Length: 246
Image 1 (cartoon, rainbow, N blue to C red):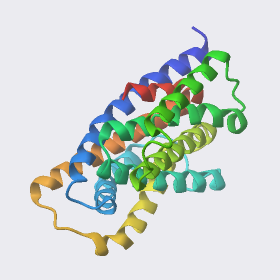
Image 2: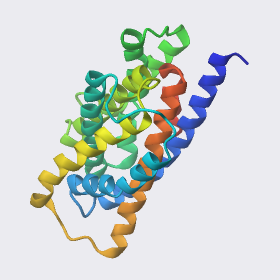
Image 3: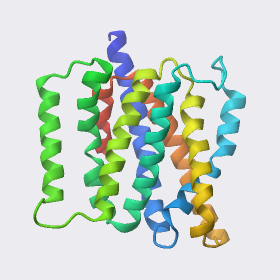
């Protein structure tokens, strides 16, 4: 097996693990969304991820600091990650989970399209066919002219676009940036922004729900690391369709 194929295979395997984690992660968020504001869910899920981030830094064998080698791209990825997380949690809170997935599944063909100008990847006819089929599926769900778009639909589409941009940038700079950099910058930004909003939406959390928030943190952090590992190793257009396994 060639080195390129082996790297793509490793990327696909990491993606399968990551998206499997996010499947359960999203189901728990859907449950919590019935009683808590999206900003509170995001704040606590990220806050409870910091112990895992600290452990990762202590055990990290990658040499370097937390200063990014590509600050512009990392800043853009951070902004896209924040928009993606907030939009997805809001969408799961107000729409059926299957409908949210139908919109978020636009991400793989957006990644395929973005990978051409941003990564210089060549996309064959079979991948373009997958792009068109995916677009058709989204249009069927949207049913333009039949049902009005709600804020939940707009949020789901924003999550798909943001997720695609995050994935492509991860592939572009992933070999140069530490995984800790790619994880911590969005986490810190989310805590600051959501923490500023939290006093206006806070609802007391019973002990049993703190366990669910912790579960979201574990699955989100682990899934995020797996997706970063996937795009560090595999071509974006190869890894992206694995998202349909959700």
